[in-house]
Amino acid sequence: MTDTTKTELNDAELSRYSRQILLPEIDYTGQLKLAQSHAVIFGLGGLGSPVSLYLAAAGVGHLTLVDFDDVDDSNLQRQIVHREANIGQAKVASAQSNLKALNHHIKIDTLSRKLKASDVLELIQTADVVLDCTDNFDARFALNQACFKAKKPLVSGAAIRWEGQLSTYDFRQENSPCYQCLYPENNGQELTCSQSGILSPVVGMVGSMQAIEAVKALLDLPTLTGKLMIMDAYTMMIRTLNLKKDPACKQCGKL
Ligand SMILES: [Zn+2]
Image (cartoon, helix red, strand yellow):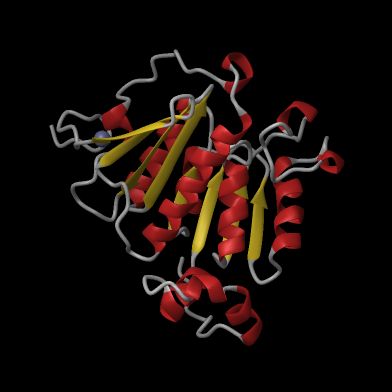
């Protein structure tokens, strides 16, 4: 939830974020709003790495990191928030220490256990923006449902092989489609990076864009709500498709 007890940026913060405050769309007011904001990041892997690094660096004042996995050597090819020295540690602890080393001005909480649906909803109710950086349909459906119920913006990214996709489902808006408008059912055919492969910077491409979307959602700037961006890093082609709310959607539909 927006931390209104923080009423100004100090000199060190003004200096740190000066290049961002220069942007007229951000300015002092926007930077203060970022410092007051709470982003919850689910998954500290390939997407969660650039997302957490950029949101920490950009000065989002409170991050909560959620992941129950440990850092493995094979993660380091793409999960750039972790270091060789972190192998064997919980991903959230590893990410927390490396993000703290990047920006001491922000607060970082961690959760390293599997959450029940009621815990997910409770946590999301305290968020200003939620980032889906997970890699499976069950988690994606659960986050979509909780964000829909709590009326929070959900920035959802996915990457596999050379391809990525991205959208924002902003449930503060009545007419926003949801993740299940796009994927109505868990068809059991999900692809994972460990099985299908992934080019390292492809997760960086999608994750950086998720961080941009999160900043814009926090500042009420235009996002990809109602659109789906599909990126192919092999051909460097990017397409943006319109995504409409499905009246028959099991999650957000009215039928
Ligand atoms: Zn829907």
